[in-house]
Length: 148
Image 1 (cartoon, rainbow, N blue to C red):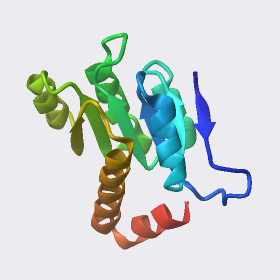
Image 2 (cartoon, rainbow, N blue to C red; image 1 turned 135 degrees about the vertical axis):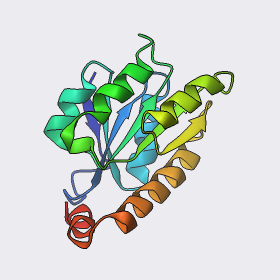
Image 3 (cartoon, rainbow, N blue to C red; image 1 turned 30 degrees about the vertical axis):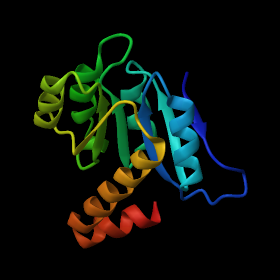
């Protein structure tokens, strides 16, 4: 299930990588991310930790309502990955599950969107999270994020 979605081979290799752990609209989200200049790393919850270790994404988009019911568990596992220690997590879930929203924020999510996800709104939230993370990082880390 893992694949990398990019616009074209002509794009520079410095695209910001975003790990997407989403079941329902993964391809649509990947297309929106690609259109905005991101590289989407699509994954299921089982493969996500190894992809995170290998690829070092700058952000994570995580569906709390994964088919295997492992949304919160995936968040916990990914939050313990050293390469994701300072990475913002953007989570998505059903509006009828406010208890999951609270738990996700307590577990380290930076933002939360209710489903159904508008891919363009998701990109806006992601860009804001990355800008805030870059602004909050020490000067050397902020530059690393731009040069990656």
